[in-house]
Length: 251
Figure 1 (cartoon, rainbow, N blue to C red):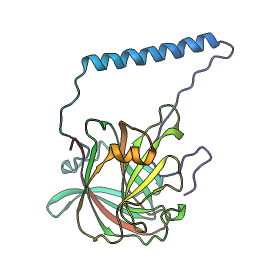
Figure 2 (tube, rainbow, N blue to C red; figure 1 turned 120 degrees about the vertical axis):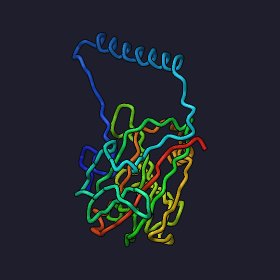
Figure 3 (tube, one colour; figure 1 turned 90 degrees about the vertical axis):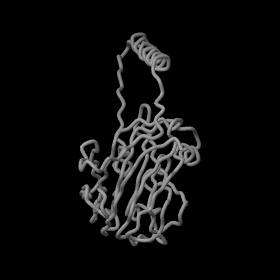
Figure 4 (cartoon, helix red, strand yellow; figure 1 turned 45 degrees about the vertical axis):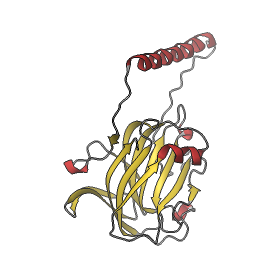
């Protein structure tokens, strides 16, 4: 998959936007509007700080596959359609993902304060691994399973950042590398690799706040969205995976 000249096309599932207002030869009015917007944001922030109470919840649930519904998830297609559905597996309801030469994701817009709940937790299982020789190339940018965090750019789409936790076929566990489609903004981190068992559930816990700081070099407090994807559009292979129990926690 080749990115478009506008910079889209890489598999980050982050749709951001910017609004630009201009008034030719009326710079004073333009400046006044910018100041007013900034003052509004400041007053809104001050109000929320003064009157809102931070949640004391120990965890924030992201997935709820037990209700058989994906209504609160959106689909983002890059190439074809990965099949996502809630199924019964080993007496539990989980998300099934099947990809055949396709790449589409499920993503959910959530606002997570990582200072309160810095840990991302999830369970996953891969039934069919991929035979990828080099995942650091565009031709090898396919994964049987991946979960990624999205931090939207404040003004421009190219400021959007994403950290991908992946089940790797080529790289060893805890190896990190820049995404071949968006090297500066998207990082890949192998959580599982080819040595791990197929058809076996693994439960993960990652300190997302620390991971974002380590791989992007700065403190990133808020998450704007989370996505799930099983994709094989580059390799043209088939992959079957399952996901369950995604949530953020204090510990």
